Length: 294
Image (tube, rainbow, N blue to C red):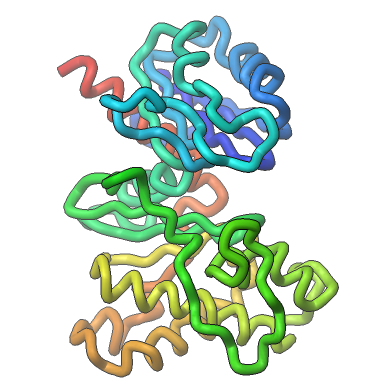
């Protein structure tokens, strides 16, 4: 099968063509510009490639309820030109194939459940921590939408007692994204995260905020795996700090050996690495193709 995949990020788009094994055979990437310019480049990539379906994992918020008028649209994003844009509708004008459509982080969670770190499990939660923070939830064998879709990057956090930083989220100030995303690290310390030393106090503070959200996720959703991706999590020294802080916060309350004895295998990086988002979009497209056939 030839399945198209679009990882539509607020900073860049990644497009690919893969198959039912999760292999990506062709790919390209380009900056996210105005929607008309960006989708023209998407269309040029897929033109004549004979894809049988296309999966899209998009930055959001997006409309996911087919019964609502905003289905297939990017909704309240501050990204210039994209708020209210009918992303899915425009794609359908050029390519009459089945579509999978979800958030970029839900797509990544789904891809990890099919081919990655959560393969064989019926639940996982995927975090991307980079320019922003997003959370995808896969529970009881399906992606969670609900009223809109999870926006776990904006959960409220307790402030670190030694942190005077006000937070940089334009909506909530000191939510998780406002305190722990890449721009928060740079604004707090005056230097990009990838230029800080591995023993810099920034990382203990970063772990403090991320671990709060992970602990709350464990208590709320009880996932079988927590996957932490995104550019910030390329700092591998964060993983042991986060795991230790999660154990401290839970304090033995959740009785599961994955948390008490084997947390190194419970809170993990993406099994698909930097391909989690694109492979997730591929998995959405494959599911759409299979559903259309059935």
